[in-house]
Image (cartoon, rainbow, N blue to C red; front, top):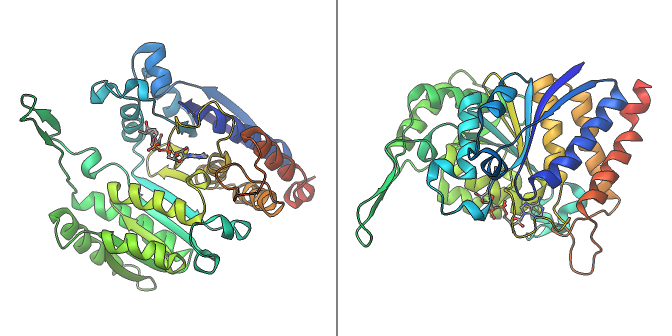
Length: 365
Ligand code: NAD
């Protein structure tokens, strides 16, 4: 198969982890007989530095003419004082909207070798396998009006949370469809005791559930869900939630399974899928060669699965990551005190080697 992709390395650790993810992609493609057509484009701070636009037109065009987009991360403190529409993050929000990617899938799985890397007790996290389904194009991040108005000392800031029924229904169906392939449980997270958006959310989700009689639907307020996620993470299966709640809960899930640096995400539903690790540009560790590339590498697995239906290739990457972790390799974020840690590049190389010696490759040879 020809895999036609646009790569957006972005800012901070984005290029470091994306570089390793592409090496793993090349290894899987080489091992299992696929051809790659990759074009690299700027986004975020890198694009602002080049052309003063966080999402240049040629980046959008390249993404829309690809079968899928692999991104690193955006964000650079140098642009923190820029107006909202000119900040690196605005480029990513616009890209999600341009691609129509309304469903953000964020798996959080506890690898057996990493039970001790979680801040929680190993017996609490063992077996955790959560799929957070986050609505990506609505809610506070996109709602209008939004502004900071007035004079210093008496300014007023406004953001708007809006959801309409079709937007809720389409993301709910993604969650129920995924649940049918998993443990058939959907937890819908909202704040229906306070927010009108959440009351509509709950009503529409309950209506959709009637089409999925085999799926057990439950509801939780977001504050209670945050507490339960650390008390009993393995009870969670598919978590369906709106944009901001999903943003927060998925970072928390990253902490639960060991590190934010492990988490991958897929943003689908539009013409072209957008795939990115959950973490940001991590300016505190950028350029040090210590970022964990596994979130970006596992993101490639999601890309192969969801945009190309290449399940064997996706599993090959996931198994290779498991093998490398079983072998004791740890980047600094995963290492416990006294454990040695390896660099971003060393971790990437180990995954490439595991892919190249995987049974999936030998079967196809
Ligand atoms: P962050 O995810 O960049 O970092 C949070 C913490 O996790 C930091 O201590 C960082 O060092 C650590 N971390 C993150 N990824 C890691 C990895 N792969 N390996 C090891 N450690 C890792 O979040 P932040 O600090 O809140 O934000 C930094 C910048 O990133 C901001 O500009 C923010 O807007 C942006 N951001 C971008 C995205 C995205 O591109 N999708 C997501 C979140 C934040």
